[in-house]
Image (cartoon, rainbow, N blue to C red; front, side, top):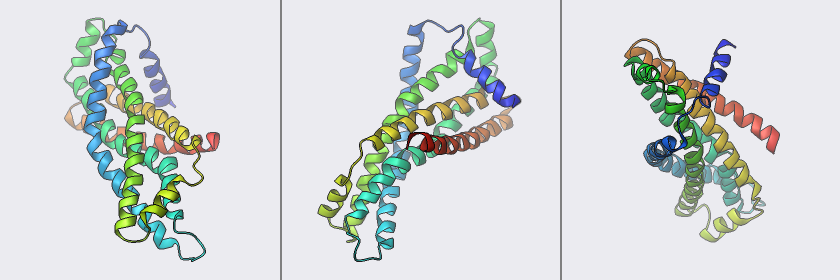
Length: 242
């Protein structure tokens, strides 16, 4: 409970004694590039293979001749949009982005760069962390959309190349009974996960004490706590919004 209270106080500090609005614009753009561009490669690899494996495994489990083959495309689409793209992508990003944020802030803390900002009268938490949180909320939904597209495309490639489904059947399946709200649900999840990962990782890095070993521990704690928070939030959002 003490850590939760400290985290909530930390989040409150992000919005008190802020710098001028113009100061944050360039910092948010820089963080968007850092978080977004550097994460595209891992998102492409993970999403493509997840879609490919989902299509093949779904075909393997369709043992009844009464079930039409186009169901493979339908299942890949719904699993991708509802769960695989937003949740798995954000779990992967919690390791990639979360560890970077915690490690960067932790290094700044032990090298006394954060202390120097505070001595100059700058709210270090707001100046350093708020742009990371805003950038994550902007970029994560874009990465989730990219992940969803690549996952469905990966399912198409694996399904058609292995001969378990024809291109026409797969395309018919991903169009059948489409519910647009599922996309909205996925984007809501991505925004919530972005906030949790960026804020928790920043909190862990910002309060690092000690040396290089403690920076490593902060990064590990950031990834662990972010993953737990994402999975817990995933369950709560599914209960509330579906």
